[in-house]
Length: 206
Image 1 (cartoon, one colour):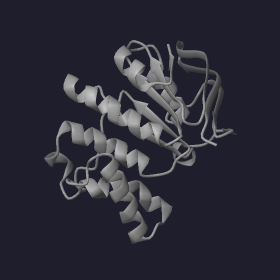
Image 2: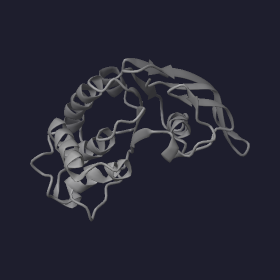
Image 3: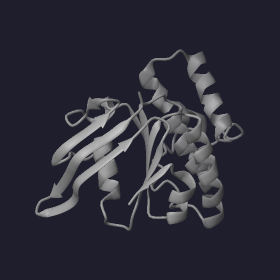
Image 4: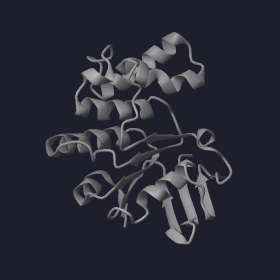
């Protein structure tokens, strides 16, 4: 079952408390936006769920399993970063396929899954291009495609649209929401944009 839960999670950096006693539960198929200004602890909370930061206290539970002591690669999550983190020397298709190397799929199965996701994200016409040859909107869709090509327990998005202009952000909100609605996965999106949260979320955590 795709679920995310944090219980009384606190993160301290020395004497500074970045997150204090945070509680949140996200069910399968639910999209929860963490909404707030810069510096309020949104991304730190997301990074603790992902395992990129270790919680000072409290529990992180994914799919019913306590994850505190597991590294990111053992948590079966897919994460989309604010900065796309694309591989510049790989084509669009190769970037999408990269997470599948760990699943040891046959070449035919991997190619079929890449093509399916590319069509969903409207990237099937640029699969042979390099990341430097595609638009900002296509780069963002590529980052999402690379996340959803797998079948993880849950999805995490860190300010996924912050680098796009106003028009692109408007169209991408709808595209990402449509994709997430069809995946039935617990999803957490970090944003400081109220309209983005209202457009994409099932629930909003302030």
